[in-house]
Length: 500
Image 1 (cartoon, rainbow, N blue to C red):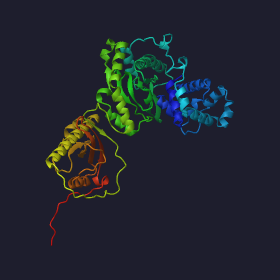
Image 2: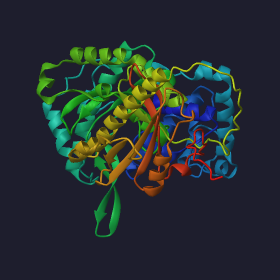
Image 3: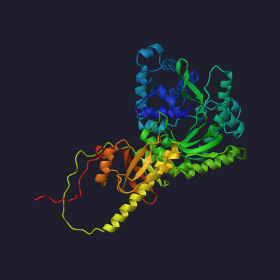
Image 4: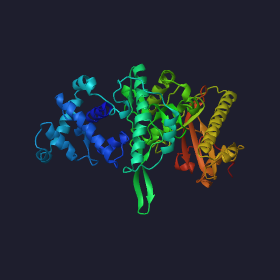
């Protein structure tokens, strides 16, 4: 029985949110266009419900429905008949699926039931994936041969190829990848979580990914060989937060990989804004570590497990901080240095300029000190923005434009001249604060006028929560005319003598 899938269905029941068959298939990286993938899902759902029935609990497969949320596959009612609930056709006409779904939701939303039975599965009935032929006859914990260069060469050769299900060579290639690199990746992750209390793994040996191919008749949905194998490792309580450690083999670079990662496909639990935050919060030094092709023959399982266990333990706090930051919205990651983090522009704001009150009480202001501090903070913010812009151009493969990013002279109406990836000029005004994003800022008449004259190329970067020690800050990007984003209040005036 697939424990990950069972846990997923339990959580959907607790949320009172049935999952579409297609969503579950995406979650498990199954391809709906491939019959054997559909059969695999049906088989796994049936095995889970058989297990629950033996335990006297509702059918968990009732939490899987068609995309519109209103129906169940014929296989569900045939399984219900097998389990003794009655005739399949009659059950379908009697809305048995909806009744069973309600029972399932009520059962798992009961706190006592959830605590007692969420991990209720005997060892003999638990498996992550069917035992591959290459490992049949071996003890469950017997150590397989270590990763080989030949296996990585094979994965590299087949990566990205369109799968032809009636082609014997293709079927054999699929089986070989699953039985070699796929099974060894499963073993790697299983052995790691034995060393890491409180962590789980999701490690289905999925070998294909969906894509499109141009044909004379138009675009055709196809399955392609994945260029990698993977297994996710995460804390038990973080199972559905889609941030995790990953281990696996990569055919593009022909190496073994381990890293701190996140799930960014369309069915991710993370919003687009959260995915962008993950991309910016995960430090480069933990986003990709590898055992190079030339060093693999010098490794053993012991060395690989020691190395990857050490990596996860050393970055547990970072993992926790990133999850907390992404899911709470409050960025606080101690390991980050010299990083500017882009956030979505908030919808909140004010409709009118807040009414100002005057106390007319005297106080001493050290103008020299304050001006110096503001000038230093402004310069630090501008440095961070310049580094950010250069990085964006580098990622867009426009290294030829990096030298164009520069600080400009005062009075031009903006601080930094940059470039878009297509080469167009980009004007950036930087406003930096150690306070939050909503704190007011000083904008000059010159800056407002320049933004009005150049709305297609003008950006105001509001840099906030700037940490002087780590040089980490967040920012909002306001593009176009400043007056479209802010209410302006005059606080100082040029006084011109009136004619008497």
